[in-house]
Length: 623
Image (tube, rainbow, N blue to C red; front, top):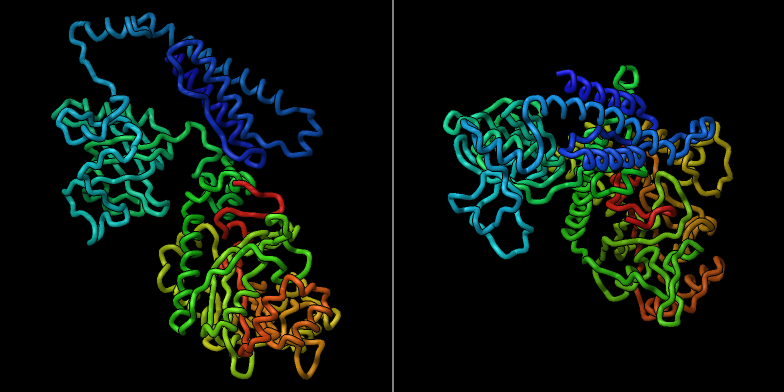
């Protein structure tokens, strides 16, 4: 009893010591379970010390003031862990020795052959897929590596259907493939939370059975004790009615009949998902308690983005991103637009300026397209009725901000116009209106998951487009005491203030700021006829931040050449582009929107990296 108490106190001391410093590390680990030999115990301790050192994050001030290095911390962590847990191990070993309980295969065999001993077969190391339907197949175990050689006739169900009309009825047996989100074992009773596709969870249980005197329950307990969180498992169980408050499927649970490990996760994760899925409000509130929560730092999340995307809210953001693309595509295809896929390796620069990635192309200089701009316009010259593209965009902007990326997904459209680029604004507004209404109508459950971690309100988007002219914008900002050059581009802070003013005045989060100064627009932008200092262009501003820009294009070759000369853009690499207008083209205009910015602003996220699959910024090229 004393040795068990010593082990418990050692474990609690270590957990308390490192869990009480949430600002200095991303996650925590406890001492490993006792290994059967002293040498194995020492190896486990050394590994746990190294893992703990890798998780500990020193603040710069603390590191400089204490002079404590990462190497010395690893040695100290290893020494403390080794001393405390080894002392408990020795006491437990002596106690077992007094009672005749020893380790090793020989002693295990003697114990098994003792009178009255009950032999319990351990879970099979590897379970053949071909033997799953055989009567002597183990109830629990680890699959052989699935290599597409066998296909049992098992029909798997989605966790999301359990407890609904679409799912299996109570009393039916089902197969589920899911991740192990949580494990709790009490005696021979096992409780497991299964998570599927990040958003749906169900509880699976195994109770002691009178029929086999608890033998199967013991096997399940041993199996799940050895299993790590985030492992992928196949569970066969019977659906029963229950009241489970902690799972999405709260009216049913699974009584397990079989359990097999498909893919075992590492015993040490970069961070715990339970820590990573808490909201800022929860973390801040915990700082007032004696058990503050851990804050998982953004860089650690991005370095292990595949794990971060298992967080329900982050997984849901990717679903909403897909929904934005879907509604954008549907809205335009219903209006007769054609989807195109333009080249991303180009000879010139699609936007002009220095923000371009250059590369060698068989001895010639090429660049990654800053947008599909020149090809969208050439599509209009090809007499397509209107085109759109959803594809990658590359910008060599050395900007480490919460709103910039070096690679993002562009939502672009181009269309012929009859008389005025206001026709383009109407189509852009129609598309964004469709996106916002569609997301709220068809992604309610997904939005609820996101907003539980990142609270936000439904954006205000009117039926008709709200257009604010450049002159009116200057007057609005001047009214707030902001003095600025009339033809200077808007700063990030000015955009934010303008968004607030427009919301108060026009009751909308989405508006178009038009008649931008020509000097801050690309070479292909058509100047205003009544004032050459201004242009027939606009920015799309959503919740105080630009999410895209558009304009009427220069479809006249002479005007286009003049614009290139004024901005210092070489026309040699653009000759084919200019020639396409020399052969006759309709007046046209279009817009380029940023998918990730739309998602960021729609969900009111503080950083665009939360809205991107795998971020590419000046500091990150991997993963």
